[in-house]
Image 1 (cartoon, rainbow, N blue to C red):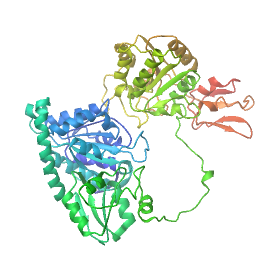
Image 2 (spheres, one colour):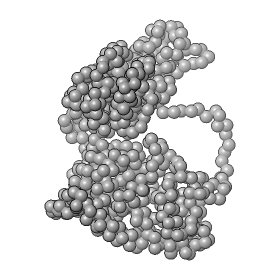
Image 3 (cartoon, rainbow, N blue to C red):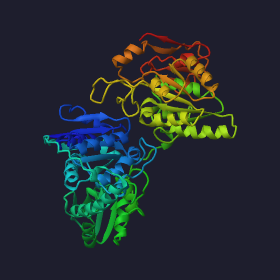
Length: 592
């Protein structure tokens, strides 16, 4: 039986069929759906959301050492967080097979950079596979588990956004039940003290030689002979683009096992073709190694190393030709940047914060990153997960030293706080900073699609669990000044900001209200008394001042001719923020 599956769904299916016992991840686009699709297999697989990617990898490695087949998944920048255990796992190897999925994001669809994580395989000296479609995504999980156990190595599986989210047909198979391998205490393998690590490094180098031999023999790397005037070496989704551009006018060396590279096979292929192209997305990972081996090829001098590729870009880069397309007036296309949803609890928070003068707002990764966009403009920086608190701390220490009168407000979401904000806040307390840390608790991991986190009261597989209490955690870290506010009540926010700005010690404001799109849990229903209804504008009273428009709510429309505002009842959730900013009380709330 065949199913139409995304790459992420196919990876989950491959993990199930490969007989894995344990999977862990932190949600992050474009990798999120992998664990979501593993989670329903409760009888066979333990699947968990971890607080961050480092914990996810360590947990999966622990399961592997115990003897289970395991998988960890994360977006590309998540591997930066998990790099510490990842590099050490390159030395230790595994017991049960282990696959680490890294989902790269060429084109920065939902990321702060487009790093090429293939270099992580080379740097950590672990095997790597790259699927080109959903069928390969499934099959390569199963192959990677076998490779992992045969060569005692973690296998890095590199996906990209186009593989993760595009659909193609996949043949569905049966699960292969794999018994746990026996656990044996082995200090010379897993006790990575310096003396042990020195010996393990020698083992790893020998392992890489065997893996290169395998790379030259495996069917994961194969040649398609056509016209030999042009030869193309490619991997991942770039292979599909190359096939579309060259068709049968070129021969192909399709690489699915991409570290170590099959240099013998590459040399044989190169000797048979007149002109050799390397088509790969982002960095010249394959190209540089081929050139270092003394093989002439054409790659990044023709194909860009920025942003996501497509067949048109490849064709234009290599042949200088472009396909004819329908021309249109691009000036009339409406720019539709992402925005906070109607009723988002973050909107009132940022609206009120934007009024504070002489303030540096240090932001973080999540829905609330949009607080820095027009018309709110209430953010100065966004660097990486958890950086808002520690970056703000660094600023504040210099502000204090040089007697500046600026204040620093660090803004971080609930899931991001659990991810890496707690240690940053501990730094604030430990080093006597005077930052104002605002934790935007919308009761869910919002940006990646409403995944549970330690603060929601439920696990990935739907089991009730201990709900992490943010005020208690903050106080345990040493913060004495803590307030929780309803961000939909602007007067509450103003009072809380006045209170925090007057302090000369660390303070925390917790903005607590559920995401407007969240399916409310029983906990939510008990705590939050949501009153149904929508807001509407009295056209007679409206003076066209645009104060409501300046909240940035997408449900509000301003008619430039009539100079009046109106509210789309299909989008409005009745949060009442616009009611509070209207100077003439032209907005009221009515029942649905």
